[in-house]
Length: 269
Length: 244
Image 1: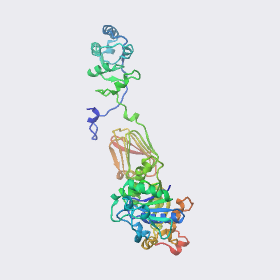
Image 2: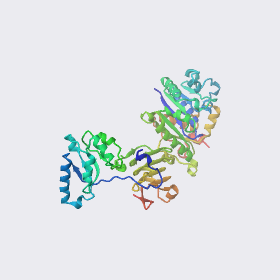
Image 3: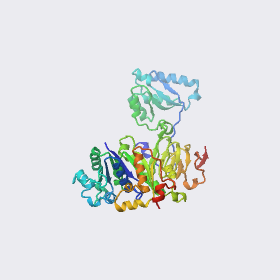
Image 4: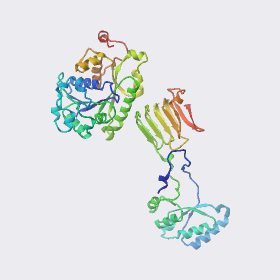
């Protein structure tokens, strides 16, 4: 059985798709067969970040409607042959998704894959609901500012009450905090919430801090998940996150302004 | 229509159902001979006329029914009322007796034995005989996980939360509220009008607190020191916030 991970946040623009792409790639690079699904029907982006937009033939909605098989729609990643992408449909909207349809696809994928990463759309409506409904683990992506933290809190409430695990009274979804676009300098100036502030408000296990980094935008533009940019701080942060998720003990980095050797040479800003 | 469906919700309550225990004399009958009952009753009353004048009385016919002796409830009531007794209930009656009693506006009380209990409990009573006290019978609700933004929780008794209550969350209880974490959301205690209800929390950063409809909003709470346990209670319709 596969482990289903939802990458969610409530708020838009905090880095869900970047995180989904990086995490999925990281898991595949570690030798686990991984699928990443774009739930943002109508605003599809994951294929751009993964650099496979030119190879999309069939999509998620086609599979739900029985117009294509799962194998026809899954796109094998060009960098890692253990990673597959199921793109969203750009011409449809979220109503094209159904709980039964999504459940069936996840069940089919579970037979063959070790991890399934669900890239949730922003908001708390149908798309986001279906993305998290079947999840085993939730990566809650939060920016260090109040509105993002508030929305994440709301999403945590939904994870705890509206998911399949909640409805069937199973062990609850494991929730992890990913603090993205973090800038220690701005925290010091009091312009940004600190890791401690966010953790106090959300009381959630911190899986990692991803520093604000121009390497993220570069990676998006070039269509390679930022985790493959091993020299970048954001890439290293995601590598740490994947390692920690898989049970490795890695100390937290990028929380205070002190730059490591890599930081000195390739530092963000 | 049951009296329940007619209650007017909200607005300052003009009435309130409470439960009290009274000590009421019970007349246990072991004979169904009305003439003998009347005679013996008068003899008893003559001993202490003041005590029995206008005294409420509950009629116990359990013994009679055990012996399969029927009695005319209507006539019996006449006999009881003649010397000034005020029958306010019957217990241990048969289905038929209970019906007759209700027709005379005499409430039916259940007892813990006898096969008539089930029927008696199903009967609709005209005057509510000691309704289940809401606050004391309702159990305490224990929550161990955080209450997140957008979540709403209602407890019919006391509410104990061992985690935080996030901003944008709302917790309501008919009794007291205890929060062993930070309160950032809204907490409403005594929502059915219990002015004795209190709110306790280990760190007060609430958006709103309310006890029995009296409330304070976040702006009113700014002067309160954070990071220390406080309790809130009602005094002269004002919420008092005190350190514990």
